[in-house]
Structures are given as C-alpha cells and as structure tokens.
Length: 317
Image 1 (cartoon, rainbow, N blue to C red):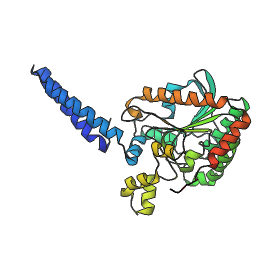
Image 2 (cartoon, one colour; image 1 turned 120 degrees about the vertical axis):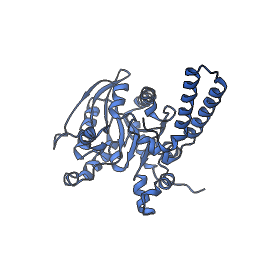
Image 3 (tube, rainbow, N blue to C red; image 1 turned 180 degrees about the vertical axis):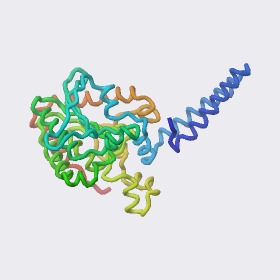
C-alpha cells in the first residue's frame, strides 16, 4: 500500500521498528527498551498526524486507491443485493450501479457511484463519473422505492458528472436537474453517504436526501481543490490552500450544518480497515433510516424542504 506524503514519518518509524525487532531476533540481543521507545514514538507520531489532518490531507485520503468503494460497502453492509440495469431511454451506466438490497433485515433501494481500481475497471466505470443514463437510472430506482415504500440509500463517490460531448448531447444538466427536483418530492425516507469524493452536481444528483452523512475523510464540494486553485491562483499547486478555504471536509461541513453526521473511520482512513469502516456505516445508516421511518410522509417532506432551504444561510458575528 503506497503511503501518502504526510504519512512518511510513520512509515520511517515502522521500518526502524522492524529493523530493531529483526536484529533482536536474529542476533539474540535484548533490545526491549529500544523497541518500546520506538513503539511509543510511533504511536505518538501516528496520533499527531491523524488527529490533526488538514482539509487537503483528507482529500488525499478520500482519493486513496485502496479506499473501499460503493460495491465494497454493498458487499460488507448490505445483503441480497440485486442489481437493476438501464434507464429505459438510452442504456445502462456502469458508473452508477443500483438495485434492491436489505440492510439489517430492512429492504432498501441502494444506488451510488462506483470507481475502478485498475485501468480496465476505471474505463468500465468511467472513473466514477456518471453519464445522463446513470442519473436517469437512479431516479427510476428511486421511483420504484417510493412505489414499494422502501428507503433509499445513496452512496456518493465521484469527482463529478461526466463532462464529455456525448453526456452534453444527451442533456446531463437536465438529468441532474430533474433528479434535484424529484428527490425533494419523494414520499419515502432517503439517506445519502459521501464515501470519498463528493464532486459538484455529480454528487448532488443523488444527494438531495433527508439525511446527508459523510465518512470522516471524505470531502463534498462544488469544485475540486485543484479547479478552485486554477481559478483563484492560476495554478493547481495551490490546491491545499483552496481545500482549506472552501471548508470541504466532513468536520467543517458538520459545523456549518450542511451535513447531518460524520461517520468515523479507522485510524488513518477507511482503506486501513474496510470491515470496520463498513460496520460504522451500517450502524449510522440503519439508525438514520429508523428515525426517518417514525415520521409521517407530511413531516418527512416538510423537514426535507426546511433542511435544504437553510443551506446558504449566513449570520455575521
């Protein structure tokens, strides 16, 4: 697993610890004091780095290639997943899988963005950037959920909707805009979780939900830090400044009341322990669904409307 730049002090201490243990074992030398000292230093370094992550460092973790993706969470969290295909207009979009599943015995409809781990899979999944067919398929599945009174779970992980010529020709703006309107009107509980990247309208196209959750090291933004830096500072090298200024990390967005809950990850990121990250997600989503199911349809719609109406409110100090 390739370390991120800010993790190098941890890796160096881990290598030093391994060398000491190897030397103690192969040469039959008592190095317990030295090993204990390095272990303490390693623990302190790990805690210092991971407890004080900057927004840009969280973006790097959110993009980690070993981070669990949508279908990984489905395999760990949901049972009996039955994928449905096609938007009934153009075709299917492999960047946006979805279908029926069960969560702790509760039948749900789950949709989301899927990235790939290698070149072949990324080409199949279009790097997690959905076409218009993906958004139209997701709305078809959400309408099915409404018909059968099933909760909807959206798993968001995309750098943004696909900006190619074909997507524009098939009116991706209309597909996303239609989803924004119709998700506000769905008469069934809806929960979204930003797993990693939450990029612009591509994320929002399945993110207008009763509850919006984020994994601890995910980010949610109208533009990527690199894109913002290219506009404001004329160079991508200022992405770290842009990430900090835009307040795109989960802790910042929770303080601004733009999301409802931060789901904790294993120390160092979800890629360190897929199973633990999945269990945390399972618990959080199940609790949110349970609380939403206690509401009447009228209460559900009123609260959803009020939730998004308060987005963008600002109060001076």
